[in-house]
Image (cartoon, rainbow, N blue to C red; front, side, top):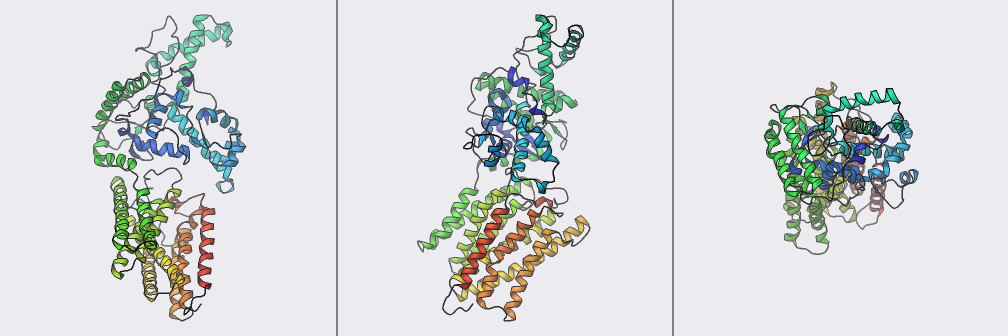
Length: 599
């Protein structure tokens, strides 16, 4: 929280730029090491701006905003970018009730005044924190990240200070911390001598002494502010070897990892800074192109190859909203018209876009498609629509394809709410990053989830209007779901034995998977033993939606167990509402009188 103590001297002393360059050139193609993976600057900007804004939409496009934050922090700190969505928190911080986005400048003093409260919240157990306390911690963390970005190139920014006479002047057309760093010790030595002779009161200093004190203080403040600026890791530590760590400009300077290549690469960013601030678009394009050409030859970038450019394309073309539209139209169109070719075309179009989007993720990450809770929704949605389409083709009925398409659209709509810090193509922890088990166990169990959802939705249709063909389809889907979830659960135990040294530990996630298996087994035994009527059996299959939701998401809310990669917060209310509404609908359909269908 040190960034809250003082407004950085660089943000006061830097010359203001006149306007923003409209074309980012090759800036978006420059690499950043972030969250364990090298990403394009354009994706890094998307992720960070989405995280800071908390789902709100700043007026400036993310990549342009990132450039402004880096190369013109004095103006960029006035741009509303930090989201405060919690109304109660806005009231507690005395912020306008009708405003959700705030600038760093608006919030800096407020967060500084609440620093003791923030420190107290940090040491509290997570389960005892209120929603407002968590929101305040999140806001402070986002502000800290934003402050790091604002300081990233403070060593390259021009300073509006007078250089004292009698000292060797820094090289260049203007003074920067980078050009003055070798002269800083001499300035500070002179300032200490002045303080010993005349004390710390600046009123006792003559003009030259005042100039020395001002220059030394400015350089010291910029240095102190930059020491914690580690987020923008854009410079490789080794230029001739792949797999080495990357550093922020300040970390490179402080830790002494730089060599001639790193210095030349950093010089390109110095040229970008000058071009941005002078509004020289030609110089801007030359600087960004030179940086891209230089870093493109690095071994890490050669290893990434086409996957790096593919990630830029993935971030620029979000296919999921169009996929959701196609699925929704394909599911609802049969209610209005009975044109199979149109329904099939819409669903097939959505499926094609879905496969392309998911396949792109697989190619970028070079691993199986399901490694996070968010990805599990993407994959289960694909399973639902694919199996629904196959069943419609075989049975010559609209319903399976429409049910699969509708469930896929709903799952894709829910998926973004599970990405609390922005969709960043997460990497996995080492114990989970096993391609064999990610392929075998995770895909089998999630395919089982998809079949459970399909069976449950078909059961809703059966409860609404009894149709013998649909009852058979529902029953077969439930048996296939039982097979896959049982096999997937057993495979998960084998994986757990290899990774954690025990096959079964009554972990909440393990219990959730077992709950689905036991629920379907109980229904099958009740049906075979004639203890459940056809209508009650259908209601039980319909209730699979609730069982799967609790096993898939509910156990994650407990925050305990070894499956820590799946913990989520903030969905308890939505999950409870879904379970209650779904239970009420099933109860109504079960009790609803329909001729020839006994309860």
